[in-house]
Structure formats: C-alpha cells, structure tokens
Image (cartoon, rainbow, N blue to C red; front, side, top):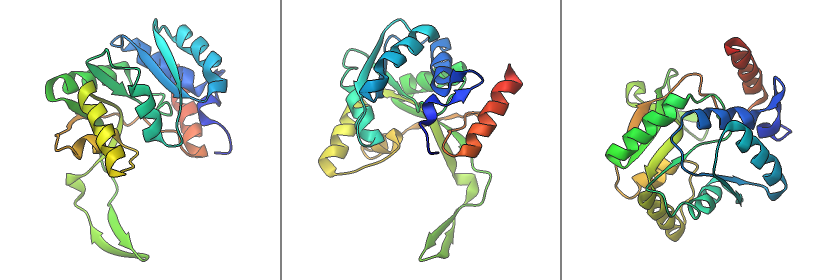
Length: 208
C-alpha cells in the first residue's frame, strides 16, 4: 500500500485502534501481547490503554508473521488458551472472538471461516489444471484460537521441519489435530490493498 496500513487514518483514528477496541469489547482476554516494531511501542501502549485493555505486553516482531506469533507466544506461558488475530482485520466483532475461543476450549483449536463465493481453480504454468469443489472450501479468517500448549508445540515442530506458513491453523493441522470452523463474518475484511481501505472507511462510516 506504500504506507503502514495499521496506522492509516480511519475517520480520525489509526486503523489499529479499531482492531484493539473490538478485541477489548469481547471481554475475554486476561493478557494482550502485540508483536510490533520497537519504535511503535509507546504509541501501542496508548492505544491499548484507550481501548480498555488492562494488561498488555509488546514484543519485537519478526521478519515473517510466523516469527512474530512465535515471539508473542513466548509471553503466554501462563495462559491455557491463546487467540491469534491479524491487526489488519479491524472489523471482527466481539462476538466472533468469543465464539472462536469457545470452540477452541471444546476442540483444542478453532478458526473463523467463510464460504467461498468464487470458483477456485488450481493453475500450473499459466494454465488451469483443476477446478476445486467450491462447497468443500472456505476462506479462513482470524481470530483463531488454540490450546496454548498445542500452538507452542505446532510452532516448534514447524521450526524443526523448516516449514513456513501464514496460517497458524495449518501449523496445528500438521500435528494431526483437527481444527474446528466457526462461521466468520463478511465484514471481517483484511486490509491489504488500497481498495480495502476505501471499503473499510465506508463500513465504519455506515455503522457510525
């Protein structure tokens, strides 16, 4: 996007403030750990305090998402369950956080996900080689929640095997652990491209 998307202005506030507010409104977190560049730590503490989080910790992010989650996990040894959420998903509802955690407490691991609306095809060398059955597919979202022991073990196994992934549920799946799926939310967009920011501002204005 040519700029730090987590700090872009969304009707007078940084995008990240919206993410933190919705997480705080879920009222399920005993501890919040944020992986972020060191130069942002003071500003992050101000945002988390304003959002209503009582206990927060910040750690240096890694070169990859997986490294950042792993660094945050090191601060979570005293909790039984962890919830991983992308800061670039500022519209996840408080209820979605609660539902994903509830599913993880029952099954050990859970992710939010929504049905695929487009036809998905596998491509090789610029040509279609397979059309996948849409009714068997979902697009995963965050939040995702896990038994802390399970996710720590999954990250350790990935490091040992040299596996890199942008999805914590996949790392858990590699252990043979089933991951429950909680219905996600269409509004739970991930801000990646400039057009996503336009949509986000419109959705926030609509709900104001």
